[in-house]
Image 1: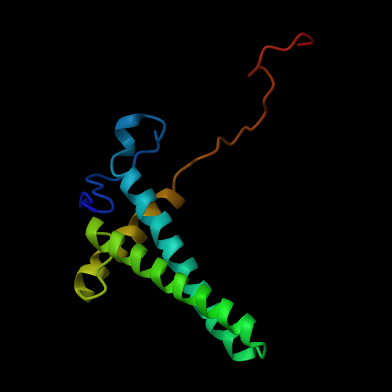
Image 2: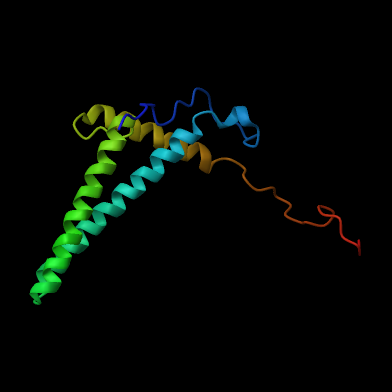
Length: 134
């Protein structure tokens, strides 16, 4: 497979509170994609851990065989996700300084998003929709 390599989020300017305008969403698709991929990677890792623990608790040979198969599938999935993330430039397990830069950018973006006024102070819906009784 040939994947296009893109940085996770090339946010060139501080995020604007006018987040509904398309030009203010620059870099967001890459950030969202990388976040979903990271969540998937962590879930796969958790599945590996759970299968490994289950293997230590199972006495039935047939059940152990099935769980061992599940473990191998989970390990393969983790490798696929890791490879995809590395090819996309979202994950640098062998370059700690590069990974640190990505993590720092992600943390800054998360802080910017957290500081945005996403919901208006007045949440009254009266007058927003056409209704027959108002």
